[in-house]
Image (cartoon, rainbow, N blue to C red):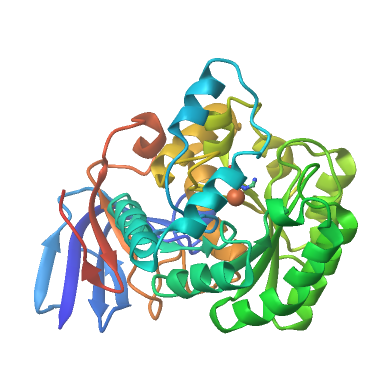
Length: 391
Ligand code: NIG
Ligand code: FE
């Protein structure tokens, strides 16, 4: 079965310099053919090759599916009360993670699986065709392994976050907990994980513990990513760069040396503005990173505590309004940037041969994703060439 999408007013390919808009590689009056789940052809709408089926984009914009490279979907319960308290002035410290750990441990597999399925579907409706999913609310050997086993039912981009916080039963023995994470827990996680991550922050894991966990994961064959410099300055960003992390995430509190280290590396800085929105915290400075030559990605950080959103369009709008990004930079960061953060060169781009992951907008331009915040502009999503929904 082949599928032709024609009458595309604005096609964002992310094939740099192949059209207008520099990195976005924009083609106007374009068509795209899908065969066997992959992009088979891209060219002018007239003449376009014949196909078994046709979607008329009616002059709308089409762009690569969003690549959400940072999400915590395996959890039980929510923390709406904590959000209300924050909006009344309470500070976010990450302490609520333990509340979600208790609820997650008490939940059965079916409950956890249903939550991941619900959030995955929610994200897909908003144009996310690839999502990374972390463990990190189990924090025992069995609960981390089952979190990753469930995550792996939904994505190949799974991340072992046993070093999220020290669970209560190890509160007096953090070194022992790090030993558990680096040994039995890592072994149990390995069959289901592609990445390892650590929350490197005051109150979570210090530089020595972070290094121990990341190097153990690396030695076992996992790729490295780090939660770094979210709540205050710290060693996480430079440690991530030193270890060759694919991405350091949050990057809210950076000094000049952090920015220089990122600029001289191929580590992506993944910004998560949903977290600053939901914790009412100062936003990271994307402009400073971009002007220094750092590769920036945007992701949701979807989790029940600091950022309970699955919406990449919302994050794009925040990035443009609050982080100093242009609409073009934000859309690139949410697609090709996310793919870089996952070291995937087949995602976040539309060219022959890659998976046919794309969104058709109810708008003439990608700019509307930021210009019309909160409006459901994703009118159709194709994932591996299969139309998903038409809300
Ligand atoms: O990325 N910062 C650490 N982890 C999550 C928050 C988890 C939570 O509050 O439950 C984050 O923001
Ligand atoms: Fe996170």
